[in-house]
Length: 185
Image 1 (cartoon, rainbow, N blue to C red):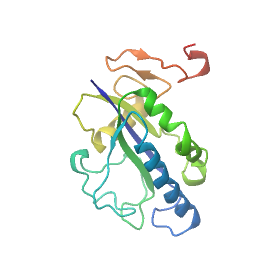
Image 2: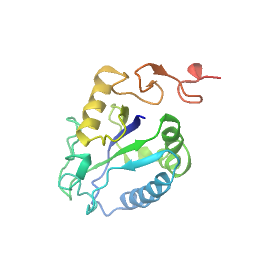
Image 3: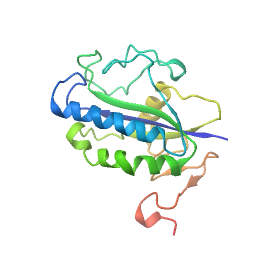
Image 4: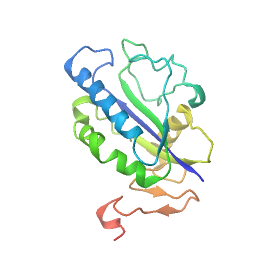
């Protein structure tokens, strides 16, 4: 059975190493969000560096998730002191559990504060695609699909909740997901 891969990417207003209250708050909320999401039904796994410190993304060992990569348009730092990004790579059983995890609970509350922490880049901040059972997506997979989504819009190769596709590549609608005029009733 295929699994849903999801890659998220955001450019922070300040580096991860910034000692200011907004960065501290972002970390505190982020840790709580990860704990809650990891217990959500349908969650399978996420990329985690075994010995990663705050901001140590580019040099961390990500194991089966591959070498860390970011979109070509990311122009901020790449060192522990200058990195100003937040990104995730995760696996889910299906669209509905991923949607529910993203748009409810602590993550929903964090989304309501996103413009306090993140720059508005005019680019998509997440992308999804289907992978075969047993396949671990890589950071480069996520980056290339996010860039594809930006350049070409939603397609079976790279899509969003609002314009999603089934594992066989056909457009799909999940009740309650998508523009109100497109919702299944």
